Amino acid sequence: MSNYSNLIEAFQVIEFDQPAVEVEYRLYYDVKGKPIIMSCNGGPDGNYIVIDQLTYDRGITPLMRVFDNELVYIDQASFRLSLQKATAGYPVVKNHPALLIETNEHSEQVDYYAKTN
Image 1: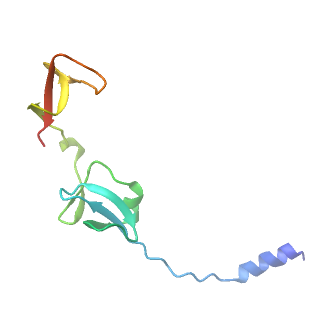
Image 2: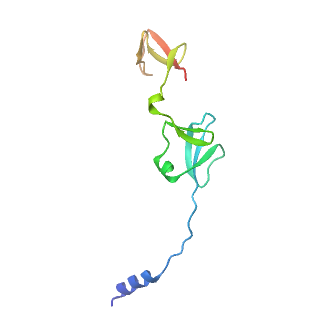
Image 3: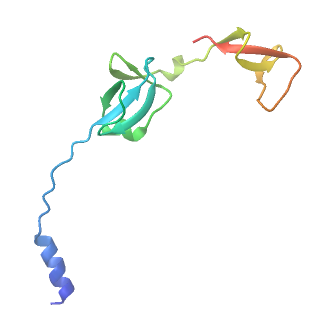
């Protein structure tokens, strides 16, 4: 038998006893319940809830919120951004609120729209 075969046979006999590592997955959120960051086994001071590994692996989505220390998902059909005419906010071409003026563009006639929610 070769030295290589003896080595393989020796390693098959060895039992590796490693203690199970407890991992705590956390989702940190702001005062409005909007997720900020995720961490495992510790993290910064602040509001957080403990989540499962699957949720941690999926990552943060815009539809996540923390409500009463529970993770909830906003229904996409009910998630709407409402805008209203304002004195500051998103610049748009006057009388054409769907035409957003980019930061590198200039227009003489400007309206502004801001979030209502």
